[in-house]
Length: 136
Ligand SMILES: [Zn+2]
Ligand SMILES: [Zn+2]
Image 1 (spheres, rainbow, N blue to C red):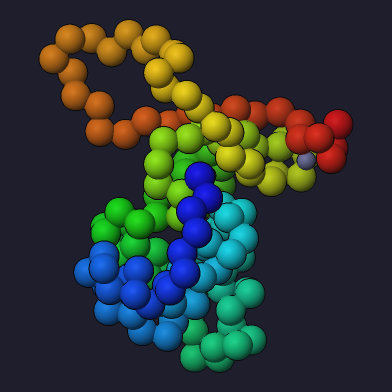
Image 2: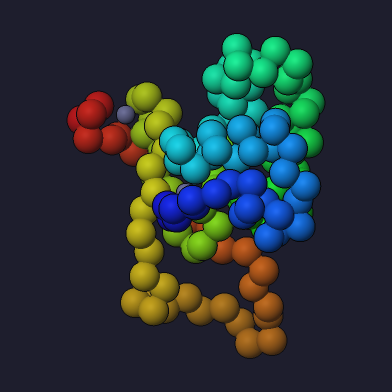
């Protein structure tokens, strides 16, 4: 879910990432739009401002963010990996018509999930698909 970050450079440093200009811009994109973008979406938005940017850099930077746990991967889309700066547990709703992905607030204390004993959960994903309010 959305979190406000005042100083992206400082935030990256706190998470053990050297805050280069490109990394700051990429993280800023994630927290500015919260639109669960693909590598392409980030690249297309930033390349006019950073002509030296490559898709590989965007991809590698996102992987670094994932390694440092400040970005998560959403696998709701079969065709493309989507990235999320919201790393707390929440669900996602993808519209089948316009493909937008919205956050869904999930209160885990209200759902009973029968994980067998002695199993350890390392990731939780909640996905919903259908039609968003604009398309409905
Ligand atoms: Zn829609
Ligand atoms: Zn999300």
